[in-house]
Image (cartoon, rainbow, N blue to C red; front, side):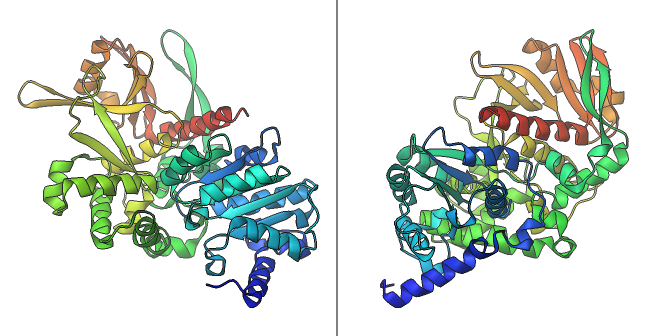
Amino acid sequence: MEYTEILEKQIIGRLRIDNPWWNENEIPAFYRDMTPRLYMDIFYPLIKSSDIQRAILLMGPRRVGKTVMLYHSIQRLIDDGVSAQNIIYISVETPIYNNIHLERLFLLCKQTLGKSDDNSSTYYVFFDEIQYLKEWEVHLKSLVDTYRNVRFVASGSAAAELQKRSNESGAGRFTDFSLPPLTFYEYIHLKGYQHLLTRSDIGWHDMEVEVDATIDVNRLNELFIDYINYGGYPEVVFSQKIRENPGQFIRHDIIDKVLLRDLPSLYGIQDVQELNSVFTMIAYHSGSQFSYETMSKESGVRKDTLRRYISYLEAAFLIKVIHRTDDTAKRYQRDTSFKIYLTNPSLRCALFQPITETDGEIGELVETTVYAQWIPRSNANISYANWREGKNKQGEVDIVGIDAGRQKPFWAVEIKWSDRYAQKPEELESLLYFMPKNGLTQAIVTSKTIMSNRAMNCGELLFIPTACYAYTVGKNTLHKTKQLYGL
């Protein structure tokens, strides 16, 4: 589109519409009325910090609340005394901005506000969905270097691709911040059910330790199933209308836009139906062990193409590949098998149907949900252990934490949606084999309702209701993120 005086007037008109606080001194009520994500208390201090001259890059999958977080940040800036006319929001995917450089849009905003010559005031500039601008990282780096008194914040949905370009072109200029789907911890707090959780003392290694427990495990389990079906996206959590047909919302606004638009435009994918078919297969079997060989046979897609598709789906933060180790936590030299988890279990509900706690697929979805609490954690070195004993017997431990320095396991968790193993712990044969083999004297096993500990010959097992464990992991993931940013 040729840049003309008429187009400039249209762009200025659009900028005024997108920045109503210039006149009203507050963000629209639609965003004001939304409950902020708990991650907001980590993200906002990064915007206000002026110690280092960097742009903030907010990354995450579609519909997890990135745009809402930008609006909430704008309102907090206004509430903290920043002039509303020094705050600029630009949605880069707006068609009228197509092929117009970020700097030109910034200068047009200043021109519109009558501040073209004001180069001393501090400005806050928000670029939403920045991945739609070709070579955005070059333009953003140039802005950071040129305008020392401006805080630039950008958001994007293709997390891994954005991070890759951030590392390559924005080293020392960008601070990356990942916003995951709602954790179960956030879900409980946003819904106002944190009163169901309490701290309980339990015997562990000849001492009393505090763990997250619940005053009503049946109600917490109901909420856990609700979270599995609907809980990953803030809009679905709070909108009864969307919950009546989550498939339409998630398919159209998340899956279709990512698979049919975002990924093809980023990676030049020709056969989007093939990509969609592969994702649907993965979503249905989330938590299962895959291999490229079997996936290729079942889907008819070549193995090299499957590898690319899986890397693209990871880049869009729809899935996470978890690699396996053997019974001594060593990586296989030829790692032909691996597990794939949805980063958000409600994706499966949207594609197929909601589950109940007695459905046959509940085990894999519960495991997917627990992994979804771990996946957002920076530098979480987790695997699953899988090995063969003799010709016919296979062993597996669901989650193993690896000590990066020693390359040895230092904790293990077995995910169960049943109280059976709390009553018959001797049936946990793989875990009881794995523990002494790796010098572990304790391990966690999740249950449906029971919290207890059992002394075994190889050490102690701590049984925790799965919903309580997922809550704890989500809480710790949030706290680890705070520590990562020095908060």
